[in-house]
Image 1: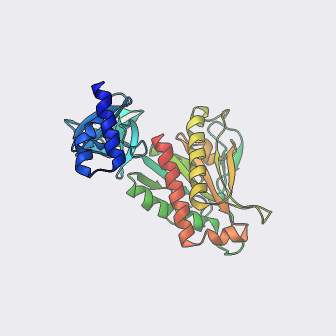
Image 2: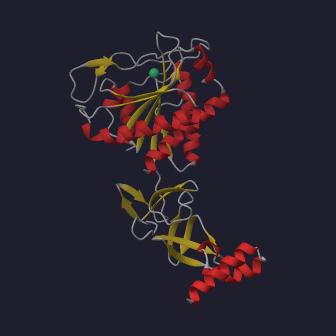
Length: 324
Ligand SMILES: [Zn+2]
């Protein structure tokens, strides 16, 4: 009875709009988010929060000997799993919430500072020097395919695809490095001849967490526009065990790219006809960023502010794949 009366008084005070000091005194009766001056952990509805001077904190915080993560997206609730915290990838135990240190989680080596550095290999498609001859379509395949092709070219701008691919790859490298990745490019200029198998072997050697092959599309229909991503199939004769990861990478990359650029979303094309994908032993996708055979999309892809969105979109997609 007494408690009910106190709550009623408190509610009445709230309704009459008394000065803040009165509300502060009664705060312990009402909502926890108004805990005046409270510092420490608190469990509300089964979720843990950390209060500092009465306010819920978000981000990474040290409590005692350990670091914990309080998710801004979850309104400050303690959250486990992989997180990107101010340019560093960290892992927080899903049960205890503690940050992992000096440990390997999901095959990912976390250092003494609790940081894991993912490796991304970017492959700017084609080159002005085209690798000649043929190579097997995939490991153990009797089918031969051209080592590389010259790629497409902008119908309006005349810019060759290999040039656009390298421009985007270099900009993407800068953005990804700032986000905590180690980035390797399969080529850094337009005068290197690389076969698709060689490109994949660079990613294999680096044990890349993601191998991103950057391309632009061409079609005989000038109206065709939009982006797609390409991965191997569930029944790939080369690397069927990679399907789930490559599909997830392709899906997340395409979604984030379309969201950032506003271009038309085509689809994730699953095929075992791409030798660079077949020779890869790491999660791989090809992004076809747009159609150079479409005059409007060709011009757009040469526009600096649109390129920024293309790069942000690809980087966001990689982030989402790495964290999920
Ligand atoms: Zn291409």
